[in-house]
Structure formats: C-alpha cells, structure tokens
Image (tube, rainbow, N blue to C red; front, side, top):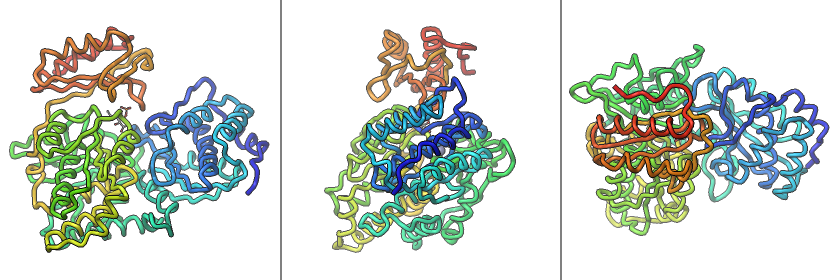
Amino acid sequence: MAPIDYNKVKLASAKHPKPPGVKFTYGTAGFRMKAELLDSVTFRVGILASLRSKKLDSKTIGVMITASHNPEEDNGVKLVDPYGEMLEQSWEEHATKLANAESDDDLVNVIQDIIVNTGLDGSNDSSIVYARDTRPSGPALVAAVEDALKVLGAKTLDFGVKTTPELHYVTRCLNTTGTEDAYGEPTEEGYFKKLGDAFRELVERKPHPSALTVDAANGVGAPKIRQLAEVVGEFIDFNVVNDDIYTKGKLNFQCGADFVKTQQRAPPGMNLVSGVRACSFDGDADRIVYYYADEDGKFRLLDGDKIAGLAASFIIDLVRTAGLGDIKIGVVQTAYANGSSTAYLTNVLKVPVSCVPTGVKHLHHEAEKYDVGVYFEANGHGTVLFSSHAINSIRSAKGGTPEQVEAINRLSALTNLINQTVGDAISDMLFVESILTNKQITLKQWDQAYTDLPNRLVKVVVADRHIFRTTDAERKLVEPKGLQDKINTIVAPYTEGRSFVRPSGTEDVVRVYAEAATRQECDELAFKIAGLVFDEAGGVGERPKEFL
Ligand code: NG1
Ligand code: ZN
C-alpha cells in the first residue's frame, strides 16, 4: 500500500510523450493504429490497468498488446477484466481521456479525476498480467507498459508472447485460483492441459479424422499449435502452414482468417484440393474459419455462422439426450450473420436468436442471458458461455441410462474445452474437431446444414464516418437523415435482399454489407448502396467500383 507519487508519474510520462494533434479512441478492440503512434498510449494503458486493479480490490487485470488481423505495421492495446471479459464499458471513457491528455500535467489531472469519479483508493495495491503477439513493435510497447507499472508499484507478471485468448484465460485463472470458480492453472501448460484433457475425453474412443491444415496467419498461432500438438497429437494431425513469424511483413499478409473470409478464397500457396480439410486463424488466434474444396475444386467457406450452427445443434442434442431440458440455449449474432444462418437457427434448430451490435463485448453480454449462450461473429470470433446454473446442472446430473451418462460427460468435457472468456481459435478448433469426430461427418456434410446467401462487404472512405448513427443492432441508419429511406428503396426489389451501413469501430471507413439470392444481385446491390453512401455522405477518393 503506497500513495501514487505524481512527480514520478510525470517524470516517467515525459519519456513517453503524446504525439501532438493525434486523437485516440478506445474502440471495440481497445486502441489500435500504426504502432509508431502507440508508445504514449501503451504507457497510459499501463496506468489505467493499475487504476482498474486498485478499483477492483487489487484483482489482476490483463493487458494485451496486439492488432489482431490488422497489418503488421499496426499494433494495439486493450485491457482484460478479472474474469477474462473485455474492459467494462464505463472505463473506456477513462481510457480515452488518459490517452488524449496533451501534457504530463494534464495526465496527472486525468488520473486524479478518474480516482475521484470512480471512488477508488489510489494507495491500494495493483496486479497486472501482460502479453503480446509476434509483431516486431511488441517489445517496445511492452516496455512502455512496464514503465507505467513500475512507477505505480504494481505487481506484474510478464506472460510473454501469447495468443489473445491465452491472456484472457490466465487473467481469469489468476483471479479465481482457490475459489469455487477456479478456472484452471494460471500457466500456459495449464491452458494446454485443460484443453487437451477435455479433447481426449471427447474423442478418444472415436475414429480420428484426416489431418487438418492450419493457416496460422504467420502469427502467434503457429508456435502455439505446435505446443498443442504435443498434448493432442495422438488424436489429430496438424499440417501448419503460414507459420513464419520471423520474416518481416508476413503477418496476416495474404493469409489468415480475415483474408479468407473477406476474399472468399484460400490463402495463395495453399494446395486446397478436394478432400483437404483446412482452417485459418487470425494474427492473435482469437478467430477461426474452416474451408474445403468441393469435387469441382470450388472453394467453400465454413465461417463463424456455420460454426455457431454446428455448435448449437450439437449442444441441443446433448442437452436433450442428457435429460437436462431446463437448460435454455440461445444463439447471439450480429447483423453480419448470413440471413440463411439465422433462418436455419430459427426454423430448423428452433433456438432463440438475438442480434446485437458488432463487437465482442455486446455478443458476450447477450450470451450471458442464456444458460448456454452460443455467440459467433461471421468473421469467426466466438465461443459458448455456460451459466453457473448450467454448469451446476451438468455436474450434479447422474443420468439413468448409458446414453444419458455419456451425454452428461460430453457436456461436462465441453465446459472445459471451450474457452469461456473470449473467442479462441485453438479452443474453437478443438471444439469443431470434437463435434465432427463425434458425428463422424466431413466438412461437406457439416456445410449442408444450409446454403449461405451470396454476400459482399465493402469499405467506403468518407470525410467523417462519425456522422453515421445507427439503431436496431446497427441494421438501420438514423443519421445522415434520409439515407436509410433511400437504402430501403434500393433494396426492396431484390429477392432476399438485405443491406446495411455502419461506421467501423476499428478502421476509418464505413462498412456496407449486402446479401441477395444470387451472386449477381448481391454484387449489384452492394455496388448501388456503396455508391449511394459515397455520393450522399461525403465520399473521399475514388467512387466504389462495380464488381466484375
Ligand atoms: P469493425 O471495424 O467495427 O467493423 C471489426 C469486425 C468486428 C470485430 C472487430 C474487432 C467485421 C465486419 N467487423 O469491427 O466483427 O471483430 O473488428 O476486431 O468483421
Ligand atoms: Zn484477433
């Protein structure tokens, strides 16, 4: 216990000056931008982490340095709350204010304001765990965080180069060890052991699938899959590609989940012939998409929506077989979910579906409303949350028949296999593999649950994306006034047509999404809406082109 020494804070801050004129915003994924602009921001996020820990009775707060699927020259930093969730929303504003304090004196004023506003005790102890992905800019940014933590006397744990979900996992473990909510060993070995044991339980008596090609986006997932293979290698063979984490410029370049999802094709160089099973991680391994080539060699994507459908149908069957009918299952999606997936969940699985605004925190919170909440973004970020009611029901269930006992054991293993803190490519991959193994189905059979509507995502650069305001889980524009009516008029004649426009939370662009019954209609619709936005809302540069 020691009060904050503001003189020391100022001296340390002077070594991490804010670039003048830059405005920082703590967005859906923390601060994210060109790495060269982030030194002052990461220093100040170190301060924020310590304050957050002081506020929460010295619980451990996580700091992750990553820019996920974004280009290698970008980086970012975000905080993880004690149970592995994203930083509580009300603190995002404190983060933004800290990052934008123009001088060292202003910074001290903002710290003092936060202390007063949140009623925290500045002399409390604080505890922080931090990690980074493989970006070359990572070590210097970690050093900036460390400078802040040192000046505030925080207890620190350097977790090293890790996936984002590993950092979420360890944060929750550190805060629950020795309690009835204990989540696992707070180490990387503990993480792999937890996943490995659960996976073994789910698949050991079943015939193994063929090898899985994993595109690691030339990121942190590559070394981690190799570590995973040490614990699950007897059940599954991984063929890791795009695993070069040392050559500059390769991270996320023409590979990874975001490339595959947005380009709707395999990474160049991957030999995706019929019969190959493949998946892609993103740069910090919290997203995953699957794909294969059909008999004609045509690329087929199994995105986050398909994973949600597979997961929900498997869990629904297990819960039913186990006789645990009081466990209520729901699925959470965003407006980017393919219309066919929503129809499948609603009409075939007959499971409640909620639609929330983009951003993991929105999905996560909505999923917490169910006993078992499955949430996935179409881009492949997602997980399954089990409420304490669900976990207690599963753990205390005895089962009267061998089928019931088996279903209960599988559900119990799933609660350990699935990373319930955040979307996790490694955990989600094992989850998908265990379902496919249990059902003994191929990627093609999984794909047959429903057929995606052709869809298109377009970026439009405008002078000021902040003039766009949305409602109805971002499916409608409120501002600029009148624009939504024009969108409706354009969409109306298209069979199964749907389109919406929203400002990105992570890039300086407006996103236009369109889907329709045929590829031609979809592309035409996307082109028309993107052009409308460009013409009516301050488009900059080249007008969006037609898709040929
Ligand atoms: P923005 O830039 O707000 O669209 C993107 C993704 C989100 C989420 C965040 C955080 C799409 C369309 N948007 O957000 O789903 O993953 O990045 O990384 O995929
Ligand atoms: Zn990511």
